Image (cartoon, rainbow, N blue to C red; front, side, top):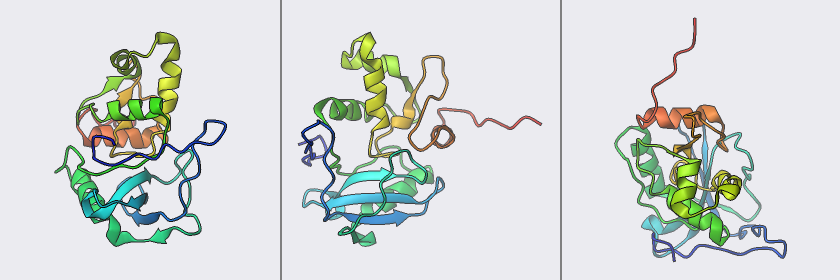
Length: 195
């Protein structure tokens, strides 16, 4: 069980890659300032509203999966997530209280859990996160790859991890969206276009 009280699906294929998610998932599309968010979840008695999030993705996101046959459109199942996301984008919420059920190996889950400890309105670097997790210097790329595979954009704040030089390194949904999220949280000043 993770700290949210849900069991994370760690099903893997023989090659070690994540297995396909179960076909009986629930989904909803929510409008937002970064584009339509695709929420995918699984029924869970322990989750607020009865649904644990498997993924939250944005349009144009690298690796974003589309809706699959067998998934059930269930916007009402995502009521708590929709409310909390609206509060976040309105500047009234700084932390999410949702249950998660993403797939991932032990290293990925360790990295993803560490992302939750980066406070709202603050950033950390890939190197600092690696040091905190005890990841050797030569394996920082693997840490970056695990961050890039975070299936829960926004609610598990991978956007708060930046380069050591202060630059906004990659983000699965695009660096422009990473910048928007950091500006929203007050961790970055808006950049005005040059005349």
